Length: 239
Length: 120
Length: 69
Image 1: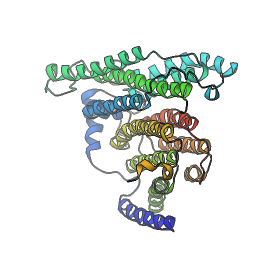
Image 2 (image 1 turned 30 degrees about the vertical axis):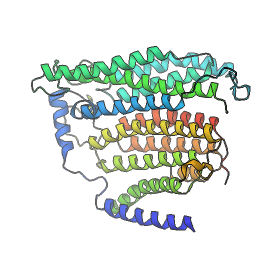
Image 3 (image 1 turned 90 degrees about the vertical axis):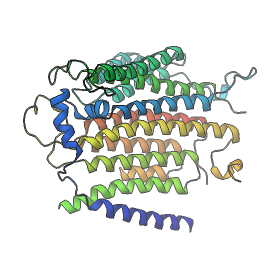
């Protein structure tokens, strides 16, 4: 009975949403803010990838907020899952996960450098090809995840993770403030370097630098999240 | 023809969203609720990206193949929005699941009905 | 994709439900690529398919695997 009520309510919701969106024809060209971005991104900033230009330059302040949200998520997870080590309970034998097989270990060792290089490539070339700081950071975290699940004794040093994250965040803010001082319009995240020419690796001015900082920060944060969760599993016991 | 395409693409995105909302509303298991939230997220991302699609457009990247030519490009603004939304969604999922693990440790169950302290 | 979503909702085994969400993300990233959004497709493939799935699996291992009514 309750399910029927819920399904009928959802049908009403879906019908109203469908009515709203069916006015917007699929695949039709529309004029809006996007034409401004598509014109100014290659001409003024010399950035080939328009999505990168929007994320880092036109909406750069928003990205700073988003990175902060991710940092807060990592911190909140650490706070929620924190537990004091009790003296008598060490590792719980029932919960101990078995060592990964030798094939997984060898493959992890083999794949880890390749994944690192792929991640670094993705965020260094973020202004030229699809990809960027978020994607590259996620790929790097995947590489660390591979090591974390294949080797039980592998540990990520939280000290270094925190340092990398803080330095990357600081450099983001510093680049933004430098843009306020040195840029021609004195606004946050303003470009103050030579923009270069389109489709060059050294093009786009500060955008490449900011995206590299975002890549380091996201990679460190996601690795921290995964490490917190996996270590909880290793020492997880029920009381 | 275009009308059918409009209805089918937006309809499937909205259907995925509704499936997620249904799971959030009816399921008792906390992990199922988080799965429902994540499905809802996917549906909404699909809807946003589909809104920005332009027929015959290319990806909004001025690669050497298209630089300098007059080509039609899809709308880059929803893509940038969805890019951030996916990362935020992952953060939300991770925090929600850590809350679930903590609740399981305290109450030894992940059914909402059996967690009595949530009721008043 | 819709089938994977329905399967993820109705199955009682939470590990299978997690694999269902992973399939949704995989299908979604292919759809994003077809809609000419390669950036979003890359993000969805890295985060939705790999990281999100592993977080769900860890959470299920820390709690109960089967959902009972």
